[in-house]
Length: 420
Image (cartoon, rainbow, N blue to C red):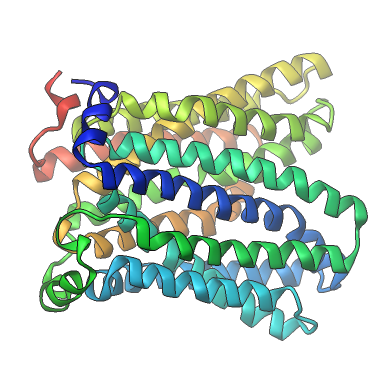
């Protein structure tokens, strides 16, 4: 049975959860649009408008990333204990306050404190949001549903970035502040949508969830297997630094490809993820197929590294063709690893402590995002071809190692995809 054929019946059996999926998509659209606004103008606002300097801003963002890693697991535990929707609302309100304050920081230390606090709240909210997805979506369709949410995310971020281009054109402190405040308000829009999202099992009744969670959730450990899978997935998450840092800088500094291709690659990646992510997720159902997707995704990322390295020394036209090919391979690796990671994060988790498990997994995601820029600069960008080979081997090795880890510890009952 495929994911496509189960979706309509699941929707008829669970109309409340079908409505919840629509609300989650609407919430994603709102916050991702705000994030697109913020991410597009943030660096310029902090360095050029506020004058804090690139090096100092970089240090703050690194420390903030560490704060995000540390906040992920406690947030997941708190969601198990006090209720997923309650914790989500609390963290989103905190983000709204922090982001609003960020727009009006005038001193460096105020900026540093607010950025660290807001990043910690953001990563904590992400952990709780993953637990929300796990409980809001039907188990047989939740990976496909999660893929749909990611497609909405990419489309909305692109739309927000397009609107932010107007702010960049105006290049006004007041306009930048307005964009950041709009991002802050978007979090409150999500809070307003939370009550209409139905959760599975005890989570449907938040008070029951809180009573049950306070007694049991803290006693349920996250297995060693789950921790290892989360760590290997953290290595694969370095891929985003590859696309956001290594590929653009390699293009600009080491190839003869036109500079405009940097934007072209970003636009192509966003569009391809929107088109491909749901289709990729339909082929991943169960632990075994997830491990295969991660292995293949790691290989695609490794191949993207090798192809990117080949662009050096080529003519502008040839370099453009090679880098576009690398971008396509990178996107294929991205959608496969995301689908595989979602499946393992859900299927290997104990539903009695879904927040704790998603907190661990999200901590790995945050750690990968934090160390990614350092890893890609110290491998590919510093050592050229040899560095690209090392980076590719890192991706291929992490993807290939997940299957044996899952099999060695034994797997839960196979999903539909494992039976084929």
